[in-house]
Image 1 (cartoon, rainbow, N blue to C red):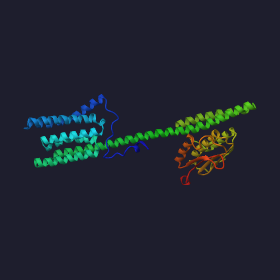
Image 2 (cartoon, helix red, strand yellow):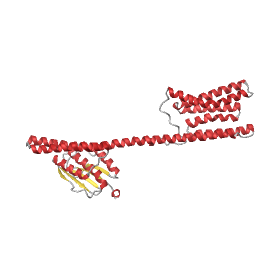
Image 3 (cartoon, one colour):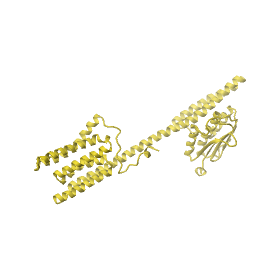
Image 4 (cartoon, rainbow, N blue to C red):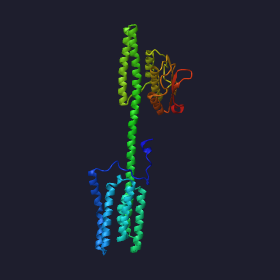
Length: 382
């Protein structure tokens, strides 16, 4: 699964993601100062309780309630995101209780100060919960003022409605931006993984084949010098080793830069030379005109990997390569060493063929030997 697929689809009932960790000292100070600036509006209920005829007990209750209300508000916005869902619910419930107490002590029009709890609910709880809470408080304010004062307080209600809708919209924008960032990060991670896989496949194909051929030719030169002392033939083999080394270095550079392309005709020439050096009889096609251009590169990699595996992993004495318009087959008469059909090279071939809608099969031939076959459906090549 991908990173985004592993995460539950976000919606209006989803909880906000918890931050990676609590803020540092500077973050706590800045958060406390910024959130405290909005508490200036809570001066109004304090002024109201002292400017109107209220008992001492009511005044003390209002002061304590406002203090608790403000403290929870600051704590929630500065620290609460790191305390988990239960603490968030408890904090919103505490603030809601304080708002109700103010409305009971001072009148239903003071439900307008529920703006703080609505803001917190919309930021710390699932968005739909905050939306329902905001609209419910607005309805309570209208009903309460209509009963208490004879007419609904539309001004205070409009403040609550505008705040609720604005905060809900802001929360949805934040959620959308978070999803876009997650998608962007996933795309970046997938691009890096794909590039690593490409380089691993190409380096395996380049170095595996080239080093195998170099090893075979170097061994052949050594045997020539040990057995017959034919200096000219040994020098010729060593020249081939030198040329192969330079070609491999060039291909590695092309692989790193991402501009390397395999050529099917060139791979046939290289396969013939490598098999000849390994003293393996080769029956190879003389032309590739029947293979569509878009399939020549993946088939070139199949040919390279198949021949390399024959030289490295079997005791074959003969190899046959057959080409069709939508398939290639590498067949030998040897006995493979190790587990058949496994390895990084064959898995890399499967990935290459999958990109052109093809498939790869590799395994023992019932009539003897080993066969690697790649094919692409005719509908894909049409």
